[in-house]
Length: 288
Image 1 (cartoon, rainbow, N blue to C red):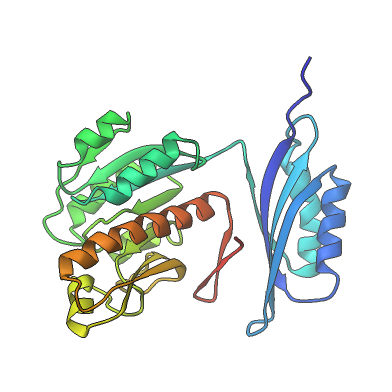
Image 2: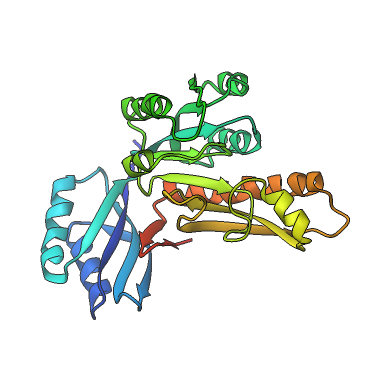
């Protein structure tokens, strides 16, 4: 008879910085029967805030979540501690928004198929019908929602209804070429990851490769960030670059940039799914 599989959870912690936090949190989890598999922490000295990610296991079976919360509640009162717990056995549900570019979509679908992304890809939403065949090939529901202009009220109402009816935890904008409204952003604040095809804050907005070509830059890049009401200005999660030269045309830059876009977006999505990101004071703190 095989041994029971241990239950695992990731706990994200934040509180005012003070002495003894690490020991007290570890002791608290030990008293619930938990074993810390991995821990990483960061102190933001500007705001005097302590941030921590803990990967914890419990033997045999998943303990009562209320017992864990009750134990941490004591520390919450004593240390002014906030925490968020996610059980590894409950993968996040993801929606991917796309337009016509398929390279980032393909990469995410292949990674999920090969077990490299621990999530449920619940649906793909697009303002064009072009990529429906790809979604069908991978068995992912595809929804074509025409968006005549960015922020269209009727289109976004349809999109939000799809997200809510499918209990979506994360929205990935995989080269979705529309700007979301403030109401949409607020509905999924800190739960929308966008890939922008430049090394932000350089060349925000439209046609960044053309802008880079006109400036004669020697490096181009891609940036994965949380979407906010300000275009291409949300907290940066991950970035990557590659070299270019005066010999490269705009299309050469596009070709080279696509490889960076894929890897940067995949890393950002993976880190979010593994609860490695804490958004704090307008920055994304990433525990790699």
